Length: 208
Image (cartoon, rainbow, N blue to C red; front, side, top):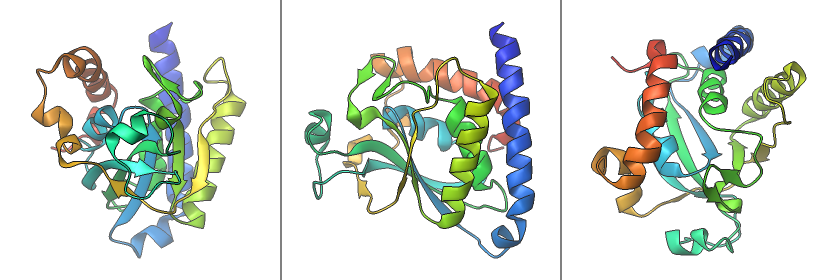
Protein backbone atom coordinates (compact mmCIF):
# COMPACT_ATOMS: atom_id res chain seq x y z
CA UNK A 1 0.00 0.00 0.00
CA UNK A 2 2.82 2.42 0.87
CA UNK A 3 4.40 1.85 -2.54
CA UNK A 4 1.07 2.57 -4.28
CA UNK A 5 0.61 5.78 -2.28
CA UNK A 6 4.18 6.86 -3.11
CA UNK A 7 3.69 6.20 -6.83
CA UNK A 8 0.34 8.01 -6.79
CA UNK A 9 1.91 11.01 -5.08
CA UNK A 10 4.82 11.11 -7.52
CA UNK A 11 2.59 10.94 -10.58
CA UNK A 12 0.23 13.57 -9.20
CA UNK A 13 2.78 16.12 -8.09
CA UNK A 14 4.90 15.58 -11.20
CA UNK A 15 1.91 16.61 -13.29
CA UNK A 16 1.59 19.77 -11.19
CA UNK A 17 5.30 20.48 -11.57
CA UNK A 18 5.12 20.07 -15.35
CA UNK A 19 2.16 22.43 -15.59
CA UNK A 20 3.85 25.03 -13.40
CA UNK A 21 7.12 24.69 -15.33
CA UNK A 22 5.38 25.33 -18.64
CA UNK A 23 3.40 28.21 -17.17
CA UNK A 24 6.48 29.98 -15.82
CA UNK A 25 9.00 28.93 -18.47
CA UNK A 26 9.44 32.41 -19.95
CA UNK A 27 10.15 33.99 -16.56
CA UNK A 28 12.55 31.21 -15.61
CA UNK A 29 14.59 31.60 -18.77
CA UNK A 30 15.30 35.18 -17.75
CA UNK A 31 16.74 34.13 -14.37
CA UNK A 32 19.97 32.36 -13.62
CA UNK A 33 19.44 31.94 -9.89
CA UNK A 34 16.49 31.92 -7.52
CA UNK A 35 16.17 31.55 -3.75
CA UNK A 36 13.71 29.47 -1.74
CA UNK A 37 13.30 29.50 2.04
CA UNK A 38 11.67 26.40 3.49
CA UNK A 39 10.91 24.99 6.93
CA UNK A 40 10.24 21.26 7.27
CA UNK A 41 11.43 20.26 10.72
CA UNK A 42 15.05 19.88 11.77
CA UNK A 43 17.21 21.82 9.32
CA UNK A 44 19.94 19.18 9.51
CA UNK A 45 17.65 16.75 7.69
CA UNK A 46 16.32 19.21 5.14
CA UNK A 47 19.75 20.61 4.27
CA UNK A 48 21.12 17.11 3.68
CA UNK A 49 18.35 16.35 1.18
CA UNK A 50 18.32 19.58 -0.82
CA UNK A 51 22.10 19.79 -1.14
CA UNK A 52 21.92 16.63 -3.27
CA UNK A 53 19.61 18.08 -5.94
CA UNK A 54 20.94 18.84 -9.40
CA UNK A 55 20.53 22.56 -10.05
CA UNK A 56 20.93 23.52 -6.40
CA UNK A 57 23.89 25.85 -6.01
CA UNK A 58 23.96 26.39 -2.26
CA UNK A 59 22.00 25.40 0.85
CA UNK A 60 22.32 27.21 4.17
CA UNK A 61 20.64 26.38 7.47
CA UNK A 62 19.15 29.17 9.53
CA UNK A 63 16.12 30.81 11.10
CA UNK A 64 13.17 32.77 9.68
CA UNK A 65 9.71 33.95 10.64
CA UNK A 66 10.36 35.19 14.15
CA UNK A 67 10.60 38.43 16.10
CA UNK A 68 14.14 38.19 17.49
CA UNK A 69 17.14 39.55 15.60
CA UNK A 70 20.19 37.32 15.25
CA UNK A 71 18.71 34.44 17.26
CA UNK A 72 20.87 31.67 18.63
CA UNK A 73 20.13 27.97 18.22
CA UNK A 74 19.52 27.67 21.96
CA UNK A 75 16.96 30.49 21.92
CA UNK A 76 15.14 29.09 18.89
CA UNK A 77 15.00 25.62 20.48
CA UNK A 78 13.35 27.14 23.56
CA UNK A 79 10.48 28.15 21.25
CA UNK A 80 10.27 31.79 22.34
CA UNK A 81 11.70 33.60 19.30
CA UNK A 82 8.92 32.78 16.81
CA UNK A 83 11.51 31.54 14.34
CA UNK A 84 11.35 28.28 12.43
CA UNK A 85 14.39 26.22 11.57
CA UNK A 86 14.69 26.68 7.79
CA UNK A 87 16.99 26.16 4.89
CA UNK A 88 17.70 28.78 2.27
CA UNK A 89 18.21 27.19 -1.13
CA UNK A 90 19.95 29.01 -3.98
CA UNK A 91 19.14 27.22 -7.22
CA UNK A 92 19.16 27.46 -11.00
CA UNK A 93 15.49 27.49 -12.10
CA UNK A 94 16.40 26.39 -15.63
CA UNK A 95 17.63 23.10 -14.11
CA UNK A 96 15.20 22.71 -11.24
CA UNK A 97 12.23 25.10 -11.16
CA UNK A 98 10.55 26.13 -7.93
CA UNK A 99 7.68 23.72 -8.57
CA UNK A 100 10.12 20.80 -8.45
CA UNK A 101 11.75 22.23 -5.35
CA UNK A 102 8.28 22.02 -3.78
CA UNK A 103 7.78 18.52 -5.15
CA UNK A 104 10.80 17.37 -3.15
CA UNK A 105 9.75 19.51 -0.18
CA UNK A 106 6.28 18.01 0.18
CA UNK A 107 7.46 14.45 -0.39
CA UNK A 108 10.28 14.50 2.16
CA UNK A 109 8.42 15.66 5.27
CA UNK A 110 4.93 15.37 6.76
CA UNK A 111 3.08 18.61 5.93
CA UNK A 112 0.01 17.55 7.94
CA UNK A 113 1.48 17.64 11.46
CA UNK A 114 1.22 20.99 13.20
CA UNK A 115 4.46 22.23 14.77
CA UNK A 116 5.97 18.77 14.66
CA UNK A 117 8.15 16.45 12.59
CA UNK A 118 8.53 13.04 14.17
CA UNK A 119 10.01 13.42 17.64
CA UNK A 120 10.87 17.10 17.05
CA UNK A 121 8.05 19.14 18.59
CA UNK A 122 7.59 22.92 18.74
CA UNK A 123 6.80 25.91 16.55
CA UNK A 124 10.46 25.99 15.47
CA UNK A 125 9.78 22.74 13.56
CA UNK A 126 6.68 23.97 11.74
CA UNK A 127 6.09 23.31 8.07
CA UNK A 128 6.39 26.67 6.29
CA UNK A 129 7.19 28.16 2.90
CA UNK A 130 8.52 31.73 2.94
CA UNK A 131 7.90 32.98 -0.60
CA UNK A 132 10.29 35.45 -2.26
CA UNK A 133 7.98 36.57 -5.08
CA UNK A 134 4.36 36.61 -6.16
CA UNK A 135 5.18 33.77 -8.54
CA UNK A 136 6.50 31.62 -5.69
CA UNK A 137 3.42 32.45 -3.61
CA UNK A 138 1.04 31.47 -6.41
CA UNK A 139 2.93 28.25 -7.14
CA UNK A 140 2.98 27.24 -3.47
CA UNK A 141 -0.71 28.01 -2.96
CA UNK A 142 -1.76 26.14 -6.11
CA UNK A 143 0.29 23.04 -5.25
CA UNK A 144 -0.94 23.02 -1.64
CA UNK A 145 -4.57 23.31 -2.78
CA UNK A 146 -4.26 20.60 -5.41
CA UNK A 147 -2.57 18.22 -2.99
CA UNK A 148 -5.30 18.84 -0.40
CA UNK A 149 -8.04 18.38 -2.98
CA UNK A 150 -6.46 15.12 -4.15
CA UNK A 151 -6.47 13.71 -0.62
CA UNK A 152 -2.88 12.48 -0.81
CA UNK A 153 -2.77 12.46 3.00
CA UNK A 154 -5.53 11.50 5.43
CA UNK A 155 -5.25 14.88 7.15
CA UNK A 156 -5.18 18.38 5.61
CA UNK A 157 -1.89 20.11 4.88
CA UNK A 158 -1.00 22.65 7.56
CA UNK A 159 2.03 24.13 5.78
CA UNK A 160 2.10 27.89 6.23
CA UNK A 161 2.76 30.11 3.21
CA UNK A 162 4.18 33.44 4.33
CA UNK A 163 6.12 36.33 2.78
CA UNK A 164 9.87 36.16 3.21
CA UNK A 165 11.27 38.91 5.43
CA UNK A 166 14.71 37.97 6.69
CA UNK A 167 16.97 34.94 7.03
CA UNK A 168 19.44 34.55 9.88
CA UNK A 169 22.16 32.06 9.06
CA UNK A 170 22.65 29.48 11.81
CA UNK A 171 25.89 28.93 13.65
CA UNK A 172 28.75 27.47 11.61
CA UNK A 173 28.54 24.02 13.16
CA UNK A 174 25.00 23.62 11.75
CA UNK A 175 26.16 24.10 8.17
CA UNK A 176 26.69 20.80 6.28
CA UNK A 177 25.85 19.12 9.57
CA UNK A 178 25.03 15.70 8.15
CA UNK A 179 28.09 15.62 5.91
CA UNK A 180 30.30 16.40 8.90
CA UNK A 181 28.53 14.22 11.49
CA UNK A 182 27.29 11.07 9.75
CA UNK A 183 28.25 8.84 12.69
CA UNK A 184 26.38 10.93 15.24
CA UNK A 185 23.39 8.90 16.62
CA UNK A 186 20.71 11.34 15.39
CA UNK A 187 22.22 11.32 11.92
CA UNK A 188 22.44 7.51 11.78
CA UNK A 189 18.94 6.89 13.11
CA UNK A 190 16.99 9.77 11.56
CA UNK A 191 18.76 11.46 8.66
CA UNK A 192 20.44 8.50 6.95
CA UNK A 193 17.14 6.58 6.42
CA UNK A 194 15.57 9.75 4.97
CA UNK A 195 18.51 10.21 2.61
CA UNK A 196 18.31 6.60 1.46
CA UNK A 197 14.57 6.88 0.76
CA UNK A 198 15.04 10.22 -0.99
CA UNK A 199 17.81 8.88 -3.25
CA UNK A 200 15.59 6.00 -4.39
CA UNK A 201 12.53 8.14 -5.13
CA UNK A 202 14.32 11.13 -6.66
CA UNK A 203 17.28 9.45 -8.33
CA UNK A 204 16.64 11.39 -11.56
CA UNK A 205 16.91 14.69 -9.65
CA UNK A 206 20.26 13.91 -8.04
CA UNK A 207 23.55 15.61 -8.77
CA UNK A 208 25.70 13.37 -10.97
